[in-house]
Amino acid sequence: MARDSGIISWGAYVPRYRLKAEEIVYLWGWDPNIPRNLNVTEKAVENVDEDSITMGFEAAYNAILRAGINPKRIGAVFFGTESKPYAVKPSATVIAEALGVTPVTMASDLEFACRAASEGLRSALALVESKYIEYGLVIGSDTAQANPGDVLEYTASSGAVAFIVGPAKEAVAILEGVYTYVTDTPDFWRRGLSPYPKHGEAFTGEPAYFSHIEGAVRGLMESLGLKPDDFDYAVFHQPNGTFPLRVGRRLGFPKEKILPGLVTPLIGNTYNASALIGFARVLEQARPGQRILVAPFGSGAGSDAYSFVVTDRVDELRDKAPRVDDYINAKKYVSYAVHAKMRGLYRRIAN
Image (cartoon, rainbow, N blue to C red; front, side, top):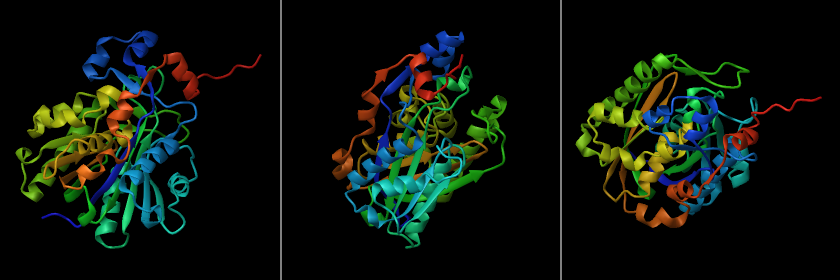
C-alpha cells in the first residue's frame, strides 16, 4: 500500500569540466587497466568558484523551477554532504536563504558519508506524512575528494542533486515503502583536520557495500511482498561503474534495469549525489505506473532501500528544468594540472 508522500520534483547539477581517467593513469603511473576494471572513463570536477554549496544551490533551484512552487512553502531543508565548505557553519541555511525559503523553515546539515542525503530524504518524507510540513527540500552535493595518487582519484567527482517532497496527490513518484539497514563497519573515514578520506580497502566491498545494500533491498522486498521482476528500474549507490551491476546481479536484477540510472562511468562517483542523480535520470525517462528501486549507501555503514511508483504527473515536469543528460553532455576536458590548480592542490612556495 502506497504511503501518503512522494517526490514532487527533482533537479540536478554536474560541473562542465571533465578529467579523463587516462590523465590520472599517466600522471601517477598506474596500471591503465584500473579505470577499465572500475568501468570509469572520466569524471566531473568543479571549477575554482564551485563547491558543495554552489552546486547544491543549482540543483535545488532546478527542482523548484521544475515544481513551480513558492519556496516559502518549503518547511524543511536538509543538506547532505561530506565536503562542506565550513567546519562550523551550516550549508543548508546558505542555500535556503539564496532560494528565498527562509526564515520560517527547518534547516539542517546531515552526515552519514554518502548516505547523508538519503537520511534527509527519509526524514523529509516522514515529516510530510506526519503533516508537520507541506513540502521538504533535500539536497545531496559533494566535490571531488581524494588523496592525490590514491585509487579514489579515478572515481571521486563533483555533482549535486535535489528533490522536493510533498503529499502523494501531487507526486511524480509516490513512496511505496522504505527499509534501512545499518551497522558499524570501518570501510571509509576521515578524521578531524585530515584533508582527505581514507579507506579500508579490504572492507569496501564486503562487508560494507554489498552486505548493506543487499540487507536493505531484501528487507524492503520482503516487507512489501515484491520481487525483482516487479521493478522496472533499479538504482544503486555508484562508487564505481562495476559495483552496481554486481550487487544487482546478486539480488536478481538484470543489467537492463540498472543501466538507465548508471551515471558513474560518465561523471564519476559524486558521493551524496551518486545514486540520487541516477534516480533523477530515471525519472526523466520512466513512464507512469512503473516502479523504481533506489538504494543509496553510506560508508560506516548503512543503506536505505526505497520503492517509488511513477505517476502521470512526471510527463508534465520533465522539460520544466535542465535534465541530467543536459549536464552530462555539456562538458569540457581539462588536464590534471588545470584540475589541480582549480582544486588548490598546489602549494605556493615563497622565495
